[in-house]
Length: 105
Image 1 (cartoon, rainbow, N blue to C red):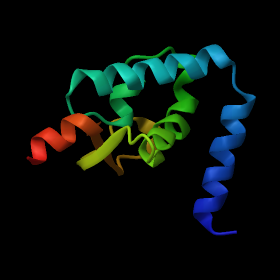
Image 2 (cartoon, rainbow, N blue to C red):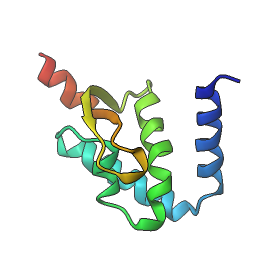
Image 3 (cartoon, one colour):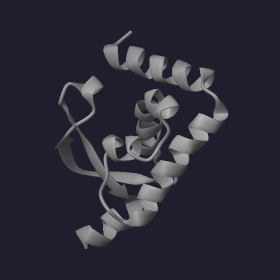
Image 4 (cartoon, rainbow, N blue to C red):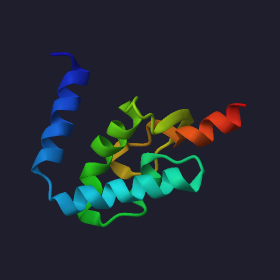
């Protein structure tokens, strides 16, 4: 297995084992950020959810980035993460797909 497959399998397993209410909390936070029209990152999501849901952000955020039909978000840049577990690495900055199309026009 490639490292990305291992990562994706771990994220999927974590999501399947999680409390559905925590998954919903993360999804609601992501959808609110999409609706805001502003660019956001996984760190933005973490600021809006309960601490118990923090481990789910990576997998849920990635699932929104990977959706193609309907497309949910478009990557518009990168930012340095402020979440300690990421050790300051660069993470994607995204915007709701409709908003990204309007900015590009």
